[in-house]
Image (cartoon, rainbow, N blue to C red; front, side, top):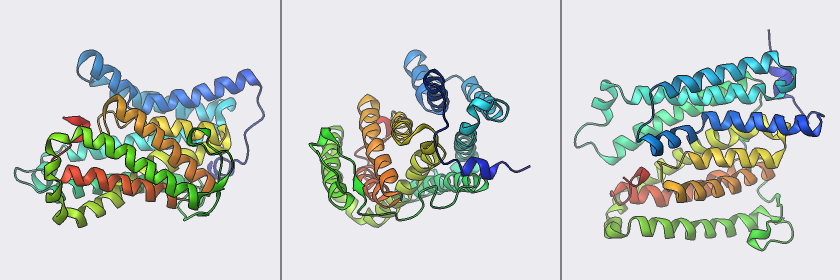
Length: 315
């Protein structure tokens, strides 16, 4: 029995009443928060560690949501979203477990291992997650354009953003560069403060720049695929562009609590960046601007990580 065509060919938000519409959005947001890093953050801050049963609670919740998408007519249009969420979580957990095996540690995380070996092996696992998600979306009937894996319209109009003093639409070929410069400044301030005692090491990163560029390219692709395209594809025609962008942005931001940038500041910065990159992906219907902006941000981050000036989670 094939479920792919009805799921992937969903063209518009289903006509539902205002109360049902609110509940519908709560279900979508609740599913995202279940899979996100939020429960882990709560336990980490509340009791200092994440309980081992949490993974099984998340898996059980995800399986329940997928089943719900098949048996409850009211949330049928969220079925693809539930399946993709389950694929993201299960793939990430599987490859994380692989990275913790003795064989993997002996191969790629031994004493004296270089930055290139450790980070490239990690990106290899992340790429495997991305490929698993792409296969899942294709099996659900989505086309490459549906999951934004095309260049898109580079000069597509960017909707006004009052926060940026932008009162009228302008092409992404203008707005994209201005946003990139602002993002570089904001991230530069954060990294400068966080890495201030060891900023003198930065010149040592010059010989590592080729590896930094490769890592940034892969990491930007993996995160844009998993945290942006994979969520927007099954959601934006169901709950609307804005809600889908906000949901994906928070999912991305929460994942940075123990990443770079990190902590509450990191969550806020990454959520804001996620909103802008989601806006780029939706408005241009492509991957170019979000991947390019993300790549530049990651070059800055990996350059400092390469020489040990900053670490994930600030630890």
